[in-house]
Length: 69
Image (cartoon, rainbow, N blue to C red):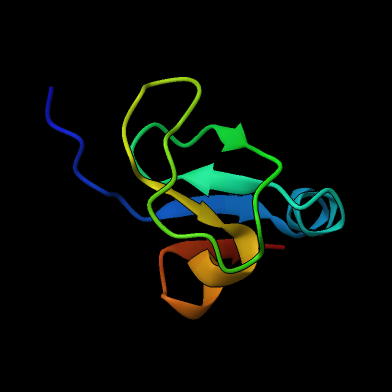
């Protein structure tokens, strides 16, 4: 299975909830996963099995997460 990373989009309210819960996002399937550290990189996704989960804050800093208002 190809586990390529893709830019993901979340709304601002969901992002706030992710940060408060210490959740991350899978850059392959887009599912919210966690809890993980805010700076988590390449954790295994519980949904698709790819090692593409980043902490929410790390995903923003790295430019993988777009925020829609």
